[in-house]
Image (cartoon, rainbow over all chains, first blue to last red; front, side, top):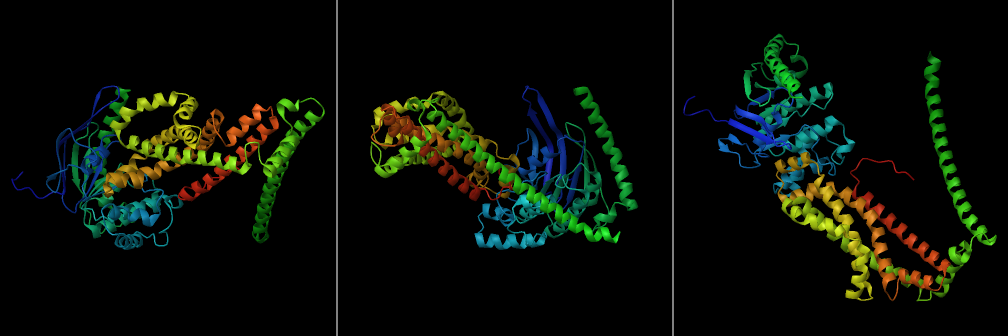
Length: 271
Length: 284
């Protein structure tokens, strides 16, 4: 490591995050966790279920504090929710009582943008995510994929420099998921934000990311980081049949399987 | 094969039509049976009295109740015009309902949003809630006099706890994801309360308002029982004092109509406020 490290959008150094369970035990979710994402880089994180992937995102978003180590955004420690961060959740987090327009313009309005300006920007984003004509529909009138589009527009309208995504497409059917992945890559290419994309789907991670980090079973640590040197722009629909893709997938999946098996062993012992 | 494709739409149309017809027929049947039950009960009561099985002195008589209602509307009651008594009770219940629910919503949200406040006050609210609140009516009459204030106070106390408990619960049940999302989108604490917490608690609060208007009416009427110069409660107490069962029943019917009207208005407000909810089939 040189003294002048390359700038990072997100960095976690020796981070620890522990929970006290209702029975009084201390549960360690993260321990000695190191990860760094460059500005504009797309990083995917895969790992066994329940290993602490979402915990990591919560720390970066400022929704939770680490018990040890340091979390930084552009080399400044995270002290709370940061305006430069966007978050796309696994479950629906759009406001059910607001129509599409109201949902998309929520961020700018919260941040004090004038109403007519917020609305104009929101209408623009609604067109960009392909929801023109649905401005006054409520979330329950939309399909799961359309609600995800609303969530993407709602997040991207704030111009996040760091975009955190917590298994955003896991609830969608395969075809819709593919469309949304393509959509995300396009939006990201324009927004140039640093992305931390948590998923349990290794294919998805390789299709989207510049680098894929594999986490260990709990307490989570970064086991290995793989650089995905597939050229961009990527065609989500056909890339998974490419030989290079398959070679990378095989290599990472060996890594991942080891951890999944360990996690299962730990579960079997624990219960 | 071509024949089937040609006739298929016709068959479906025919099926849809019979399904609609079957539904209509079912609705008509339900309506007819409901009427039959009503006629049977009221008719049975009336005939029971005429045949001497039921003593009208204690249990009244449908025709007597109707006569009483007509008499009240035409000649006024023993304590003044009927509409005046109705208005006084509606005014007391309505004012108590508005004040009580506003206080309940405010306190519910404040305690739901603030852990320290809720830790400190939850014990007192539990204690206060376990007191039979109708008894407070006596205190209010002594302290606030025979006028509307004591009835309004009793209605407030009846309404407050129901609305408070629901508002509190509604705030606590607000979706953690929505709250996290709003915070990251940039919402301040006040914006969070207004844009996320209040709307998600709203269905809980509205549900409690349905119940609590009934409680407000009970509060006003019990207050009037205990001591008043006018109102439906006093009308009932007067009828009771002169052994006039028909009068008691007639007053009861008037109050029931008021309660049903209030319920109808509340449902309209609720539908207006909750348009964003997915359509739910209403049983009616």
